[in-house]
Image (cartoon, rainbow, N blue to C red):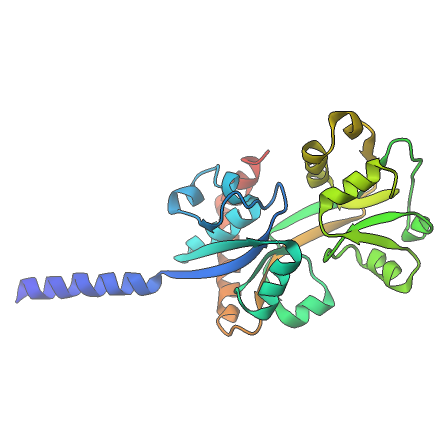
Amino acid sequence: MKSSRIFLFIFLSIVVDIKAEETIRFATNEWIPYMTAADNGIFTKDEIETRTCSDRHGILPCIVAAAFALEKITVEFIFYPQGRAFNMAKRGVDHGAVGWNRNAEREQLFYYSAPLMKKDRVFFHLKSFEFDWKTIDNLKGLRIGGDISTNYSEAFMDAEKTGMIKVDRVAHKKFNFLKLVAGRINIYPMIKDAGYDFIKNYISPEKAKLITHHPKVMHEATWHLIFNKKKEENKRLVKIFNRGLQQLKESGKYDQYFKSTN
């Protein structure tokens, strides 16, 4: 009888543990160095606990996986082109998507997590192009590059909507740097460190020397995990993620992950 009780306790413990494990899925897009489709799939427990977990999918998926792991939730990342990643999340195929800015339209469709990352966005330009700016008004008449689906500062977006400035948006960030060195655009707003990473990876060393950035910060951009409002369980998941993210910050692991990428 005693042994039967012990067996029952072990069995129930296993069942409870299985129920406690949950796997969810997020749409993700290539954005070096923050997100990379080195290979699709699920982070293992060992990867989450090491400083080098960001080497696999990039720092943002690493943070998402680690925060959910604290609540015994496993995250699978599926990489798509940027536009398709958003559409998959919008349709509710995946629970949501990783690394998106806020705007009024998206807030109608998604719950937003606390910020995954904050970075300064600046204007890149050729050293040979005499460029200075203080307000958006100074951008009138310039050929400006931009990225499809990227939400820039409120003032910049308003100026684009009213036609005060014209922005030529393309599907991949590398195309804007190629257009910049070719003289087809004058300026391109981009996150500072990510911009120089793109220059290193896609522009020849000779042409890379021609590019610089304006020291004035366009704005501090934040990126979030977005959860589709169509899925009822996402109300719970966004709270769980925010709790896990806060634990990562308090433990020092959040800063540790970023240091491992530098």
